[in-house]
Image (cartoon, rainbow, N blue to C red; front, side):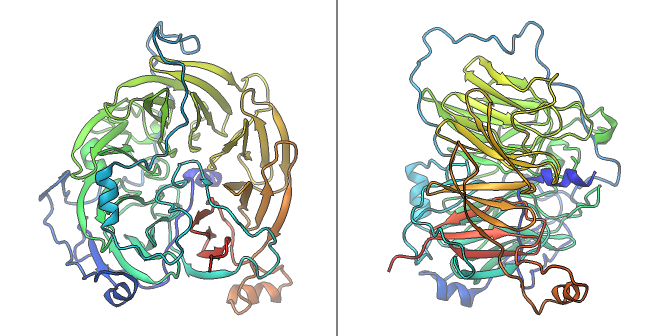
Length: 567
């Protein structure tokens, strides 16, 4: 059962200074600003905000504040083993292209495509950066949502001392990497047992700017960490949080002031999933689109096998107010995050939910298709994010079915290929990592368990395995400058050339640990090998912003200079 925690996707980090407590024991959040640091870091003074003290049940934009957090009980967790509800007569594999449908393809647009108003809002936020080249990393898997960076000029010689450590800090409970925008790093974790915290620090120095806290009573039924699973989403002058207990918060990026919040558990009847909420929302125009997975009142626990949906599988909120704009599908929630794309001049959103893939139009919520793809095993989950290239969508899981590639269109899809159920070998079985496509090939870690995991390259069009590299344990990738930064779960960093013909290692690095650490000293007494600075489990894909590489291990976040600053 322990291996299930790997699905919670990517890991979160914390801070090494004391968190602020909310004045109440309800969901009222509070923001605290390190005004001295902020004054030194920002062009404009940032004043501390007052603690938000609302009475339970008081109305607020986007919903009500409940008396308490509905976090689920210690009941066994539910699962719905039923397949997707495909209407009788609907052919999943043989849909035809509608008459008059344009054949021109366009590359999927980044999920961070912004309107003029959004760019103006972002421009109002003081820019704290001193490193002016490169890109921000404002959400899960970066500005294009595929764990690819456009930056150039990386260091390729990874001998000890290069790339240099710029700063580091301790981390708390959680499973979501930070996000970075205009010189601010937003980290969402939990240091105290009941206080989720968003910490804003200078992304280049690690100096604290402000923090926002609230209370929850979420308890992981299987005994794993109770901190957030999702990454913050930065959009102009606002940052959005989706907590493990189901709270969505919208905050101001300059000082952490709460603008609105929604309790998805109270509003939509979400039954606690394996590890709570673990799907990072996306921004589309004026909408915040979130996987919710609501159920009718008095629903049983997940492991009962009788949990049903109530039409709130996916919910779109007005990003300025938190008010619901639409809700769709009876599907329940998974841990895979939504993907936005433009295909033949039409916008799409793809979400790999508990029972399979949903494709829909993100502005209206009109559903185009549902494609059942899930293992019949009760404990199975879908975690890896869909990969979209032109009009093809790739999905993968690790508990049974493996992978499938679809060709999509406004009324449905055609199956290009899928792993065969009667053959043991699968093309790709991703667990919590999302594979990366490049020039007709797909690269990713395949395998459910550490001892069986292989880094693989497969042919995109056919699923043919080009090469496999065992022995790296489970790993994650980030692509930059013609290379992959590969982080294995035991803490080793590797630099690989992107090469469909072979596993092409360039450099390898284990950051040296602290010799004065009590655990390190105890290991030395017993003749055990020293621990590196990035301690296992290291499950999160690295991120890169303005030349700085951020790597997360079990107990800390480390910032490395992968691209030297231009003088």
